[in-house]
Structure formats: structure tokens, C-alpha cells
Length: 185
Image (tube, rainbow, N blue to C red; front, side, top):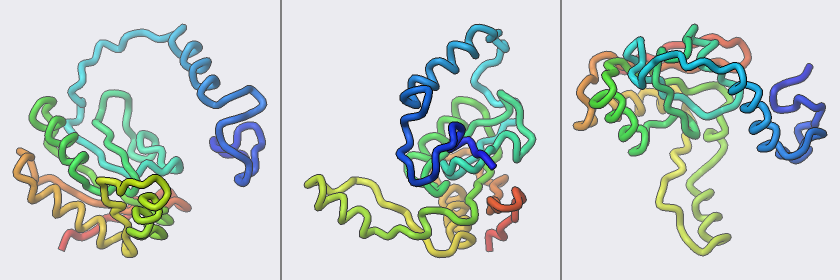
């Protein structure tokens, strides 16, 4: 079975970035040229049609538009490691709500997240390696359900957000594709 991470038969142990077709960024640029050749401006503006922002993990296994039945223009998508609500996520949500009209927020973490195996020691190792401590926290966690609850609480209590009454959190199961809702309590 082939995955998008191994379209040319690379094993997981092989370096990512090179393929039989050349460097991966060149493949992406070439794909964009093909896409642009048939592109027609859909005539949309930046306001999401459904008035919703989705905050999710950057994990390559999450195809959010397909999993949620979304089309181009339906939502704002904010992704980072873990789908954790950080200051930058609050920044993006604030712009999404105050400048672009979203009212609802969906938070999606997932099973088997890499942040479950990291610790703040990761930052210390980086500091030793590069001589400078990162200004950001790793935001690792051991309990995905509890981290979804914490993220929901961060959104609900942010003084910058206008709309905090329609916030729901979920865990996406990477083996079944199903969402499991997390009770905020």
C-alpha cells in the first residue's frame, strides 16, 4: 500500500525531500504549474462560508477537508504541532473572528500524536545544540483528551475572541477516521 508520504516507493527510513523526480520542492512547484494552468478564480473572498475555524494538528495523516466534508472556502484552517491552542493560534482565531466573521471553533487533536512522546527536554536539547533556548514551549502532553479540554478552555477564556460559546473539541482516530467528541468538563 502506498501513502502520500511514499509516492515513489520510499521506505519510511529513507530521507524525505528527494525522489526519483528530484527534490520534493521542485515536484511541488511543477504540480502547482499544472494546477495553475487549469485554475479559474472561484470569486471568493477570505471570509469562510460556514463561519467556522478549525484548529488541528499538522499531522500529515489528517485530511481535514475530506474528514469533515468541507469544500474550498468553507472554513479557516489553523494547524500546528498537536493542534494545541497557543498564543499564535489565539492570534489567528482573533483575526478570523474579528476581521473575517467566524463564530464557531472546532478543535481537533488525534490518536498517536508525536507530542505525546516529547517533553520539555526537547527545548533543552535544542538549546544545547544551537546555543539558544527556543522562546516557545513544546506543549507536549500525555493525555490527548485532557489536552483537548485545556485547548477548549484557552479559547473560551481568551479576552481577544468575540465568540466563545460555540467551541467543540474532538480526537480524530488515525486508524478509523472517526471523530470522538471530548466533554469540556
